[in-house]
Length: 263
Image (tube, rainbow, N blue to C red; front, side, top):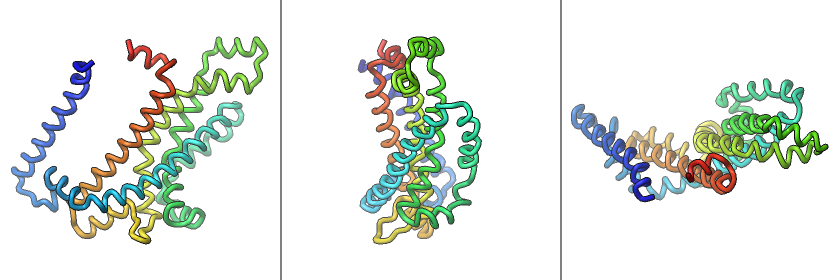
């Protein structure tokens, strides 16, 4: 087991060390100033100096990201159940979902402010719009991917539509739903930061990471700007790790992918 862990962790550690060394070599060779290309050491120093501000901003962004993610998960599952229930509903509604997904959020930002309001409600709305589509698509595909012999068996024994959905289609769709959640988990922090740019505010000093990006950029604090990007990345990892744990908790007892992995 320990040897297997080393095999998993050693390549990314070595590649990361190589990239950091290359970073320092590029800085030394070009002679660029820290306000153009800060070194990793300068970035970590800026992160330490600004850690209180970064943590407070990350907390604000996490609230918006989590709110939008949860709304996207619930709405995505509900919409997928509608789309998976009947072909005519799927044919009639799916193109309009594509229209919503393909409409740039920045174009509808004034409408979001008008309807949802600025600040946290608007940020949650932006995060929802960016995150919900992968959940809908994956879950709908899962509902439609139940094994045909099992569907025939249920219908042969006179199972109701609700029994078929509850006992067959929902369990079959669970891995697809969780895959959609993993994709949405990577998008949610990005959506929250983007939402802070578009419709957020910093009233009471509670601006999120998107607000910090604007502040550090105007103040030309480039190492702190890189530290903000690093904090955003860590927040995204936390979201993905939480969904990955949920995936393991719900599937590892019965799904084939975990059984093969355990062997």
